[in-house]
Amino acid sequence: MNHIAALADRSPTPWPRKRSGGAAAAPRSRSLLLCTASLLAVLAFFYFSYARVSTSLLRGSLEAEAAAPRPSRCEPRVRALGQRFLSYAPHSGFSNQLSEFKNAIVAAAVLNRTLVVPPVLDHHAVALGSCPKFRVLDGGEIRLAVWESAVELLRTGRYVSMADIIDISSLVSSSMIRTIDFRVFASIWCGVNIDLACNNGATGESPLFASLKQCGSFLSGFNGNVDECLYSVDEDCRSTVWTYQNGNDGELDSFQPDEQLKRKKKLTYVRRRRDVYKALGPGSQADSATLLAFGSLFTSAYRGSQLYFDIHEAPKDQRIQSIIEKIEFLPFVPQILSAGKEFALTTIKAPFVCAQLRLLDGQFKNHWKTTFLTLKEKAESLRQNGPLPIHIFVMTDLPEGNWSKTYLGDLAGDVDNFKLHFLQEEDELVIRTAKELANGGHGLRVGFVPNSFARMDKLKKQCAPRKLADVLLYIEEVICSCASLGFVGTAGSTIAESIESMRKHDVCSS
Ligand SMILES: *[C@@H]1O[C@H](CO)[C@@H](O)[C@H](O)[C@H]1NC(C)=O
Ligand SMILES: *[C@@H]1O[C@H](CO)[C@@H](O)[C@H](O)[C@H]1NC(C)=O
Image (cartoon, rainbow, N blue to C red; front, top):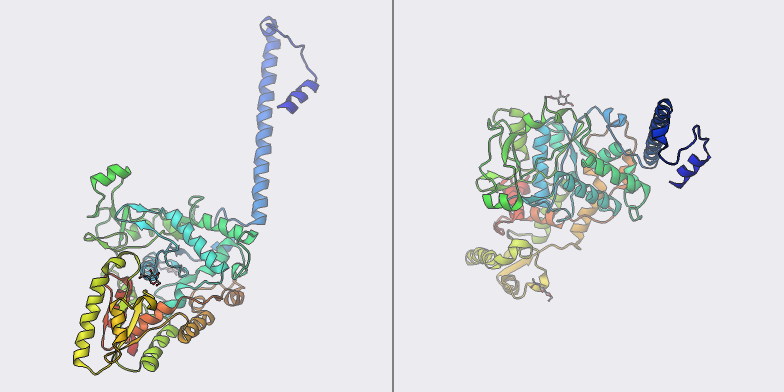
């Protein structure tokens, strides 16, 4: 204010000032002039300050753009790809991430979009919350959490793509789906050389990471939707169950929040079944967007309904129906399959039973009795029918040092009747397989790579994981699929379900 006052003091005064009661006494014409002049002055002041503010804003944003490219609309390089993409935000443990991956494949196929294949996230690095309790992260929040986890995996040299572990090559080569690796996708969308972020010793504070952060926030939808570029799906399991060609578009779902919950949480919405093609496909606003960004695609059966994604058959669409059948079971990549078979053939070297005992995590802590009882019944019946010893492959989260006071301890001590086998992180087979995966670059090979993308070799080299991936679980699952004497799993465990499915598809003999 002081400098404005100073300026006013120095400027020539066209009219003598009247200190008191002057305006009323002044001739009409003079007061009119005075009014007009001051109005002009005020207008001019506002105009110039507005102009100054807007140019400085503009300059600021240009400077920010030069330092850290931040798309504010779909960049020409993105439009030049000539494809439309679908991304989603996986969470929780591996089995959960795999089931979301399958839903994403279906959604991408229905909406005819290229699926952005994410990394395998650390166990529980991202959590959704609880659908039945209507307490979940918003779409934007979970998208950003997944983005940040992915960038952190790159930076710390632990990035493994879902397609490094799960073999989708036949789906892609038969053109059932199109995919793009997240790293290629992010490089192009964010206009950064993402290979420089891989195995980067820096703390993640550099300009590169700053622009990745901004880009992640943009792609998560924090700047809002952008016409013909980005559409973020904000319907989640609190409001929507996605269906396809079920003829029930818009109907209320059978599962609704009860009155008490509605009052307590001030919920105003209801859960509707919505046709994903009608809502987000041709003719919708979402359809014109180059990227369609879902949040979580987690679903599970709950009170006779599905929590979020209910597309399990498509009898009226043969293409989608065959994709659904095909993904019911997706195999591990060949390196993992052969590691599991190798262990069964050369280490166990005999018919065996597999025991999958989930004892420590979450709900499973309280079910030791049932879990061990099932194993005991199986082991006893095998012992009575011989030949002895009975070979048992054990996969469990209970450390060996804690086996002694459990039924596992009894089995381990009974060397005449039983021989136990297990695999550990530090075993040569596990380390060798993890190295093979790191060098294989499966995930980068299957996806779409635009001709203009010149950094594929750098990505392959720089972004191969330095720290070995957690492949123990996958190999164990394959070993259990080879157990010809049977399988005893933990009730309610998704790992047990996955093993049952592999056994049904006879993974071991293929
Ligand atoms: C699906 O997308 C591809 C490539 O973007 C296009 O060539 C094809 O015609 C589309 N198919 C349908 C059924 O819209
Ligand atoms: C396993 O053993 C360790 C060391 O003896 C002990 O501290 C821990 O509480 C045990 N865990 C369980 C689940 O029994």
